[in-house]
Length: 129
Image (tube, rainbow, N blue to C red):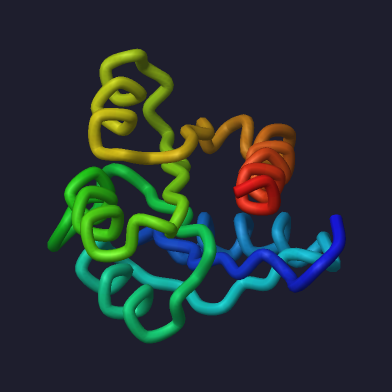
């Protein structure tokens, strides 16, 4: 892909998961991790400050869960793409995420395989808009 790097905010309450996701993203020259957050409320604060292109959100987190954070992020900044990265591999969570306005859903156990293709899809959407 050409142009500026895709700027990503990584949100998960588990530091090891955040680190793993960041390692996947940092393997790509055109993807930049602009910051990390530990819960939904922290994600909203950091998104306001850093204005990422994409926010990768866990669903189950303390203080504010990922679905509530997604709704707020999309309301405040409709151009931000939100992708849920969750351990929950169920249609119910996927439908709830879509209802919250997310752009995609990746199961954590498949992140090594599915996360970069999902971000490439979002890059294409952004370039064609």
